[in-house]
Amino acid sequence: MSCLQKINLTIHNYVISFFELQFVISLMSLPLLILWGLPISVMSPLANFIFTPLLIIFLWCSCITTICCLANIPCAILDRAVEGLACLWLHLLSFSRPEWLIGFPSSMLKVSIAVCIFMVLLYTYIKPTAKHCAILLCLIWCSLILIRPYFTHTDGLKKIGPLPLWVACVHNKTYLIDHGALCNRKNRFTNFDYHVLPELIRHTGHTTIDTVIFCKPSNKIAKVAKQCHEQLSCATIMVTPKAQCFQKVQEQFKDENVTIIPLHSAKRKTASSVLNNSK
Image (cartoon, rainbow, N blue to C red; front, side, top):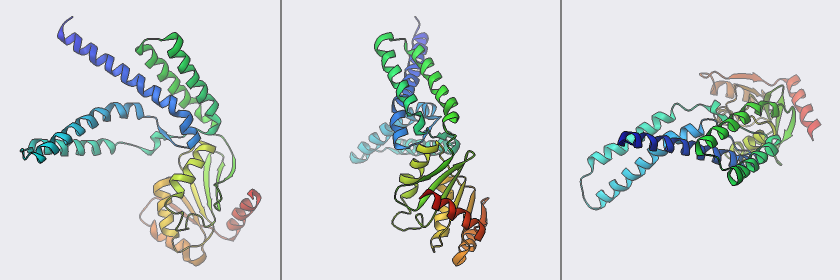
């Protein structure tokens, strides 16, 4: 076997083993992600394949640069290499899309556990080659993504913890109904990542909110609405007209493609009746 053939074989085995490991990690961690209500990127195996070598090179260059600086050894080339790697990293990250993040609802927990048991039996008794494992696990991963929509059609209203905050899923559209919780200074910066999104993913599998409804006026409502748009990717915001809240939110989004709707008396009555029925 020639040297070129050995190199090609080594690269081939590395790629197969890498993707096999990525699919094993993704599938084995899926039950925990479902329990915690955390999303997962469909591009994670490919992203890790690209970023792992870059991270290793970056860490090695950074360590050598630090040693050179401590020893007073010129390292201008390494400095430029580190800066170039950082710019390349940020450039590659700019291609990421929010649509790549998907959530698996709690109704898929049994399916994910069954997949984990199958993988344990596969590696314990059958012991196929790395190539066959990578192909089989890739098919399982794609199958879970394809059947996921059949588990996410969960209409209803869910209360988020003890807060006056509700998530509704109606006809595959998600609505966040806030009655003062998001504008509370104590909870404003943690509600989204630690309460709203995990609860939303656990119950519906959705990772975004289509419409946010603010029923209670607040002087922080414009900032909170901005944060909702950035973190929840909501395209429609319904706001109470009390205390000029509608005007403040409208001014906040005057240069952005976000629909702002005043929550008039009839709409407020509808939202209030929904809240009362959920209590």
